[in-house]
Structures are given as C-alpha cells and as structure tokens.
Length: 496
Ligand code: UDX
Image (cartoon, rainbow, N blue to C red):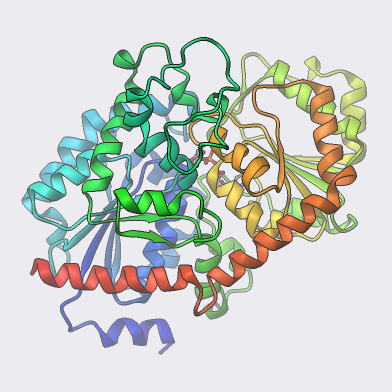
C-alpha cells in the first residue's frame, strides 16, 4: 500500500471533515481548485468537487483527472447544470454570459443541493465546510443559512483582490471610480498600501466604467467585496514576500488569510515524487484544451534563454490588427519564439491569406505556433528566456516560479494590476498596457531578452528563490497549508 492510501485509511474511521469545493467554471480557477483538492485528499479530508457542466465536459475530454482522482477514495466529482450551451470553453468576452447563467441556473440548484443535503447521500458525512470561489457570494450566503463554515478561495491575484475587489466600495466612495476626467496616469490615493504604485490605468479593467449603477461586473464585484470578509477564511495563491505590500492591509479586513502559493509548485513538490507513471507531467494536467507537447522537442533545439514564449491564456482575445502588430514586433526582435494561438482567441474574420508573406516566411524560420502548450513545462524549459503574456495570475506566478521575466500585455480583470506589479513592484518585466504597436513590442522584447536582460534576471532569480523557500517544509506557504488543514478539521468538528 502506498503512502497516500495509508494516510487516507488511517483517518478513515475518524470523523472525517467533508469539504465541498466549488470553483468558477473557467480554466484558471478549476486548475487551482483541483490542486487544492488533491492536497486536501492527501490529508485524509473527504472532498466533493462541484463543477458546472460547461467546464466539466472539456476537462474530462482533455485530461486524465478521472483516472488520477480514482486513486483517492475520499474524492468525488459532482456537476451542476449552468445553462451555458457552448460545447467549447468560452473566451473572456463571454465571461458575464457564463456568470449570469450560473446565477440563473446553477445558484438555485446549488441552494437546493445544500439545503436537501444531496451531497451527503453518497458520502459518510454531510458537507462540513465549503470552499467556493470568492466570486460566488451566493455560496457564502447559503453557507451562512445552512450554518456550514465557509472559506473562500480567490484565484485572481491578491494584489488585485485587495486594490480593486475588496476596495471597490472604497474606490467608489472616494470618487476614484468612475474616473473623473481622462488622465489615466493619476495615482490612486484611496487604497491603503498601493498609494505610490497604482495609477488609474492600473486598476482592474472593470474600473474603466462610466456608469457604476448599471454595470453587472461592478455589481458582482461589490457583492464579492461584501461577502468575502464574512467568510471564515480566505485562501489565496501567493506567498508572504511577494504580496507584502498588500497582505498586512488585507488581514485587517479578512483576518484569516491563507497564502498557499505558488500552489502549482507546492502541489508538484508534494505529488510528483510519488508518481510512478512514465509521463507524470501529462498525467497531472488540468487543461481544458488538448496540449501539444511536441513544442517541448522544438524548444530542445534552442540555446538557453534564447526563446520568447508568447501566450494570452485561456480567456483573452486579440483582433487581427493586434495580432499583426504583436507578430511583427516579435519577429522583428529577431528572437526565436513559441506562440500559443488558442482556437477562438483571434476575433473577427481571420485566415492566413491576410498575413504578409514575409511575416509567414520569417515565422517558418524562427517560430513555432501551437494551439495549446504544456505551459508549466514550457516556462521551466532552459531555452525560454522571456514570456510575452496577458498577465493572468496563473501565468504570472508560473513565470515567477521559473524566474522568467515578462513582457505584459494585459487584457482584462486583474491583469492590469498584475502587469503594473510586474514592472513597478517586483521589477521583473515591462508593462505594455494600453499600447499595441510593433515598435513598442519589438523594444520591449529586446529589453527583456537582451538589453536589460541581466537587470531583470537578477530580480527574477531573487523571486524564484523566495518562491522555492515558501514551499519548503518550513516555508510560509507550507505552514499556511498545514494551518488550513488543521482549521478545516477543527471547524468541521465544531460543526458536528
Ligand atoms: C483568468 C483571468 O484572465 C486571470 O487574469 C485570472 O487571474 C484568472 O483567470 P486565464 O486567461 O485563464 O485567467 O490566465 P491565467 O490565469 O494565466 O491561466 C492560464 C492557465 O492556463 C495557466 O495555468 C497556464 O499554465 C495554462 N496554459 C495557458 C496552458 O497550460 N497552456 C497554454 O498554452 C496556455
């Protein structure tokens, strides 16, 4: 019997806590939540993982999650309909469509499941604690109604969670949102901790609104700002040093914060050594697109730190004009590049006949384009020297872990904040927000890959080391996870 099963069986007859995890139905949050689920399972905690149908289908299609979690007798998937009709995962422009469908269809069903105790029918105990995404304020409400302890898991960046989510009511009250006038470079003084860092242009994309009273995203975030502090705890994917600017302030509002990041490395450190499968990386993926692992062979052929990796994550899109500007900038920088072009990520009419032949010819020589890459492995590959990213939080923290400097081209939500922190706070890259011009792109790539490479490499290495330390046995994130597990057990027993 392996160590996992021994651990699980030793607690089998004890009164097991039974945690319900309910992530937002998008790639990033589901990926993080599955990693957390696996860590909890290893500690003998019973986990029910609730996905909405829309995200569960592609997850089963492209991963080995069912086989992987089959080895945990204390884990089960449940699904809830969400009324989203698209067969494939949707892009960011449909974010609110999904959220509205979840609110309309999943929320009442979820309430019914919780009130009727449906989750207990196939398990030894009813749900003793809920871990919903922080965005699901209705889940916090239902937890309170049913007297179930609740710990929110917010997978957006903590720097944005603090400045633009938890402080959105403050920003509105101070008159900072909506903006008055059009000076996007004005500093934001109303948010404690980031007074010298954040300009209007660095606030989350939803802050660029004219009409806060009729904006569904503002309404959603204001609800989240009210509900998260009412939860019994808040899990975030960061480590103490990385977010030292905001964490002391966040703790004044939400005293029980668990910074358990970088979650993907902590997960890897705990899980990977135990696996005996020939290709552990492929087994561990939670990607809702099919990964093209051949790009790793392409990377093998390149010199250390010579390749630029380009990806805009799972939700961002770009127009044909933006595609061509970035493409020219990248090609003109002269660096070999690996570019992920997620199906559906280019908006409007597009086909290769619209691309100048010189660009295609040069791409054949120095580029590799794939639909979806095994990103963690790509960023960890010695050939990768820079990352042109949309600054999604997972991409950012994955890059930090590998010490890869970034060129940031943020698209929406927390990405505007993340790109500012990358340039101004962590000093590990260049922020290109609000621009899309081939000359600017070329300069940014040259700066990161060549001209200022040593400066960026120095700070990137420092953060890489701090990230590693945080997940070591005595590191701050390891201690946070241990405390989280103890607290789940204590809160569950108090619930009995
Ligand atoms: C969304 C929001 O856009 C982001 O700002 C927020 O922080 C989380 O939700 P997303 O577009 O999914 O993020 O970007 P990101 O958070 O960076 O996550 C993308 C994930 O997909 C990463 O874990 C990355 O490793 C993975 N990925 C991306 C791949 O595995 N292969 C790829 O080719 C591209």
